Length: 127
Length: 385
Image (tube, rainbow over all chains, first blue to last red; front, side, top):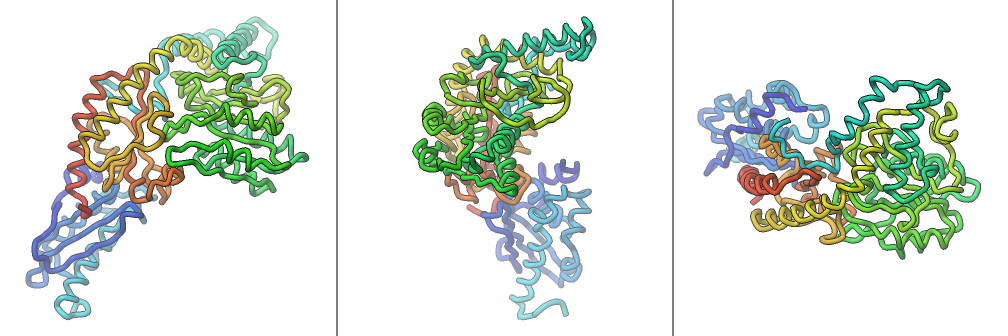
C-alpha cells in the first residue's frame, strides 16, 4: 500500500533527533490522534542550515518527516514555507488517500518551526 | 513464502493440504450443478451432504440444521436481518455487545435505520459481557440476542452458556458469532444453548468464500438471498461445491487436530506474552488473562504506533496485526480496545499475534529476539519519552 520511496524513508529515516539550542521548534499532532511530530531547525543567513525530527506515528508519519528534512535542508526560510503537504506526498511518490490528512503533518511541523524562529527574532514573518 | 512467520491466524489460516486435495476433483471432474438430475450433479450433491454431516458432527447438531453460506459476514448478516424480518410483528429490539465484529455491528446500524432498536452492552476491562446485563436489557419487544463466542481481537471467551439459559427462559432467539472458535476451540451448540451460530471455513484451515449458519430446527428466519430453491429454499444461489467440500474436510480434520493444537498454542501463547512483558518496558496484555483463546496474544506497547510496529515486523518476515487507527482504516483505534477501557493513545500501540497449528517454538523465540529491538528503535525516534 505504500510506495517504495515511503518504505525507504521509513526503514532508513534521515535526520532523526533533536538539535541542541535550536533556532526554531515546531510541534504538531498529539498522542490521542496517534501522530506526533517535533521538528527543530538551525538557521544561518536566512537559510535552514540544519533540521532534525522526532516522530511518533505510522509509516507515513515517519516517512513524511524524513522527507521534509531532506527537502528543507539548505533552503531559505521563504522556500521552506512554500513546501506543502502535497509536495511532500509527491516527493514520496504519493501516499494512500487515508494518510493524506491524518499522517501528513510534516509540512505543518516545518512551518511551525519557521514561525517559531521568526517569533524568537521578533519578526512576524518573512521580510 | 519460505521462512514466513505467520502469526495472523485470526485473520485467516492457510488451507490445509488435505483440504486442498479434497477440493480439487470438484473443479476438474465433478463440476456438475448439484441441483441437476444427471449423475455428474448427483455426485456433487452427495459431496455437499457428506460435508454437511461433517460440519454437524463438529458442532453437535443435526445435518439438516446446517445451511451453507459465503462466509462469516453473510451468516452474521443473515442471522440478524433474517430474524428482524421474521419477527418484526413480535418486536423490534435487538441486543448485542459493544465488541462484536463489524459483520454484526454494521447490520445493526442498518436495522436501526429501518425502525429497529439495538442495545449495545458494555464489557468489563477483560472484555467479558455480564450475563446479568443481558437479562436486564431484555424487554417484551426483544427478538434477538447476538453475542460472539470469542472476540477476534482480544480472544476473550464470552459466557455463552449462561447467556443461553437467560435467552431460553425469556423465549428470545440467541445467535452466536463463532467465527473465531469453530475448528479452533470446542463448539457444541447444545451446550452453548444457542439458536443460531455463524462460522467461516477460512478460519479453520479451509478455503475463503464459504461458511455456514446453524439454524436450530423449528426456528424461523427469513432468507437473505432469495433465488432458486437451494438449501431447502433457505438460501438461493448455486452451491459452491468445492468450497463446501473444503469446509467439510476442514471440520473433519479439526476433530483430530484441534485438541493437540490448543495444547501447543496455549503454551507458546503464554511464552510469547511473558517474553514481551519481560523484555519490553511499559507493555500490557489486552483482554482477559485466562478466559482467552489458546492462540491469542494482544498487547499494547506504549508510546509507539501500531502500524509502524507492523511494518518493522514485516521487514523481519513476521505477519501480525494491530488495532491502531491506521490499521482500522478510520481515525479511531479499534472499538474493541476502547470498549475495554484502554485509553486512546495507548490503543494506538496495540499489536495482535494469533498462533496456529504449525506455529513452532523457534518462531516464537525469533519474535522475542527481534521485537524488543524494533520497539527500542521506534521509541528512540519518538518525541515522547
